[in-house]
Each structure stands twice: as structure tokens, then as C-alpha cells.
Length: 203
Image (cartoon, rainbow, N blue to C red; front, side, top):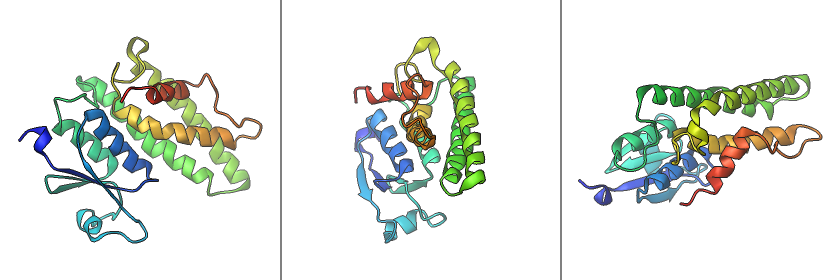
């Protein structure tokens, strides 16, 4: 079955960064899809049917088969639509490096940033310092993934890590704004420069 005749539906929510990841991947791949907006206070029966375990968005439905969890969906999209721009590098080592930092983003950055805005006083300051440390570690580590100064981790094309990092930019701004006396993110920040390249990418 050709790609153009396949039925693709995405159950998402406008404010969900996880849904936006999948939307971005579908746009990069040039995959036509129908979007179903979900009200998380009144979840549809289809959402509960397609994702009975977590009952969350996003859920991708491909030819009637549901796939849940944003990272799982991203890899599924890349493995299913192989002829379109690749989200992961072709070589095994490159894929391993991208997956390592993708895991770092999800398990280290997002988790700690969430904690920073749910605690107060000394506990908040402690978490904030941990977030800055992890952001610095992340920023240093990903530089090697940009071959020859290319704007994206996949060279001239947006890849899986770029998609995840688009959400990281929002988190990065939130952390910088949290710092007293520094309302704007650092202009020289590698993360900011990379994400600015994403904004300028011709869709």
C-alpha cells in the first residue's frame, strides 16, 4: 500500500508538547493525517479505547492500529515511512547517540524542570541548580551531534532529537526567566541557536 493511500489519524491536545512532537514529525515526513482534538477533562471513548493503559494523548492511529506514547510514535513513524526524510541517523552508532540524549531530555531535563515549579524556598533553589547543571551538560554533549556545523542533528534535515529539543527550548526559556535579573535566555546558548534554526526551517 502506498503512503498516500494510508489512513493516519492523530489524537492530540493543543497545549501538549508531546502531541506537538508527533505533529512536527508528520510534517517533516510529509505525511497527510487527520487531527482529532481531545478534551482531557472529557476524554473521548476512542481515546480511552486506543490508550486504555495511560488514557493520554498523543495517540497515532495508522490504518486502524493505535500507537501510544510520543517517543514510541516517533520511532514508529520513522520505521514505517522509510523513503521520506529520516528522523534517526542511518548508522547504528549515530542512532545510539541520539537515543541516549533523547532519554536524557525526557528523564533528566523535563522531570527536574517540572519539580522546579512545584516546590519553594531552599528546595526550589536546589532543584534549579540541578536543572542548570543538566542543561549545561546537555548543551555540551549534543554539540558533537552537529556534523560540520550543520544546523540540525541529521545534517540539513530535522531529526528526532531536534523534535525533542523544540520542547526543550520552551523549558530552557522558562528556566532562564526563573533566574532573577536574567529575564532572557542567553543569546549565545547553543540550544537557543539550534532552535532558532528550526524556526527558520522551510516547511
